Length: 178
Image (cartoon, rainbow, N blue to C red; front, side, top):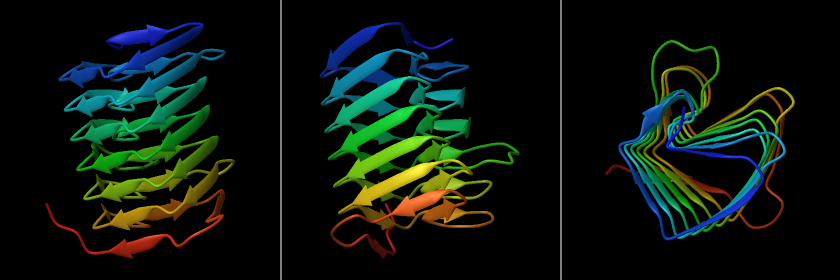
């Protein structure tokens, strides 16, 4: 389980999720459910599917910080639904254990939009140190920074097997160390 599991619609503001663990990390957003999280912190959470958040429904994150989370799919977020992240940071998250799928920060198997986000210093034992955009996944990144992400196999910043677009503005990548 997760620290919080949502059915229906929920809003979380200014919450700190620290050292939670379970199958679905700190928060699980179920199919047909909708979560809006604003000014939240997710630190040192762990799970099999998304150390910070597991999404099967819809999640919108605004000004959230996800740091040092770990999972066997999607170190910070495992998205199999719809994810919108605006002005969020993903730092030092880790995909652990043997896995066919990756995503040190984000595993995306469905729809993911990132606006003005920073993905830095994330690692993956598989592909996609920053993001693993799987077959069938759609990723839109706008004005995002990918810095110093590392993967054991393909794609330090992004491993793309789906559809990835940079709709406007540059996606910048450079070396970053904590």
